[in-house]
Image (cartoon, rainbow, N blue to C red; front, side, top):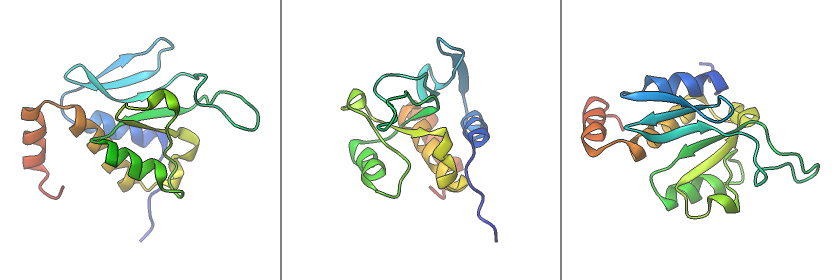
Length: 138
């Protein structure tokens, strides 16, 4: 069986596939996925805190995912094989960053779990409980 590698299109599809999702546009028309008015995945514009250490160029393809806890964040960013990272700007913020160009290092299933966890971390208790009741495998 062939493993499906994650793609940018999958981020959009998976985020939109969660219930009660709205999409707002950021300052440069970048998509921001929200549940109940709270962002859970967004495509970030190039910022000074996320840059190539060799060239100093800002990464143009950073995606932010909320996480349920600081321990979840650390598990993702401290794994040397993980494409997830953080920057000092996000210290104390329950989110992780990944470059779109590195999404293929994840399987589509791994990405689905990250998107679902992001949604669950931001959804209201009622919405979270309803989703979990219908997705008992979690």
